[in-house]
Length: 233
Image (cartoon, rainbow, N blue to C red; front, side, top):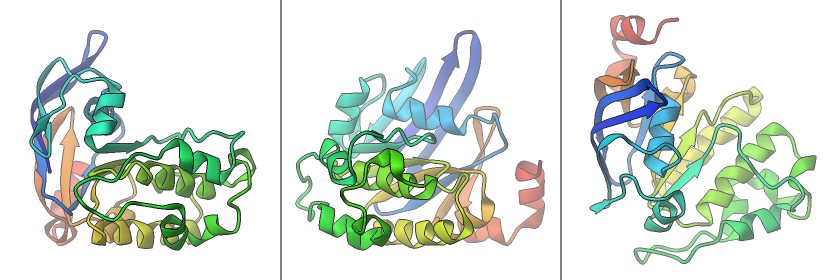
C-alpha cells in the first residue's frame, strides 16, 4: 500500500530524515516508534506533503506522491490526523464530518456518519454539538472520523493517544482495531508503547531520521533488550 524509499527531508538547514525506508502492506497497522525528536512527526508530514521531501520516493497504491501538494495527496487516498487535531471548533460534529467528505474509492463501502457513530458511539449523542464544546478525547475521535469521511486508502495518525484519559484510550484501541479490520491501512506515530502494542501488527523504530528496526510487533514485545536499546528515555 505504501512504499517509502530513501526519504530525506530538512527543516531549514537541519537534516531531519536521513534516508528513511519502510513499507506497509494493505490492511496492516504499522506503528512508528522512537524517542522525542527522532523524526516521527516529520515522517508523517513528509508523506502528506506538509514538509516537502528533499529527495526519495513515496508511492501510495503504486502512485508516486512524493512532493505533491497535500490536497492532491489526500485525493489520492492518504488521510492525515495531526497531533493537534485541528477540528473546526465553530462547526458541529455533523458539519465537521461533511467538511471531510470525499467520494468512495476502490469499490469499498463508503464511510458515512452513521457508520462512524457506530465506530465512535460517544459522537452519536453530540452530532449537533460544536467542536469547541467537546473534550480532548471527543475531539480526537471527531478528527479521526472526519478523516475517514474522505474514504482514505491509508490513514496517518500522529500520537492518537496523547493526553487522553485511560477510558478514552481504551475506546481508541477498539476503534483503531475496527478500522484496520474494515480494510483501512494505518500508519501511526506513537510514544505510548502499551497503546502501540495493542493496535499495531508491525513496528518500525526511527532514530535520528533512519529506520533502525522494522518487524512484527510481537517480536518487539518479546525483546526487552531491543526496547531498551532504542526506546528507553
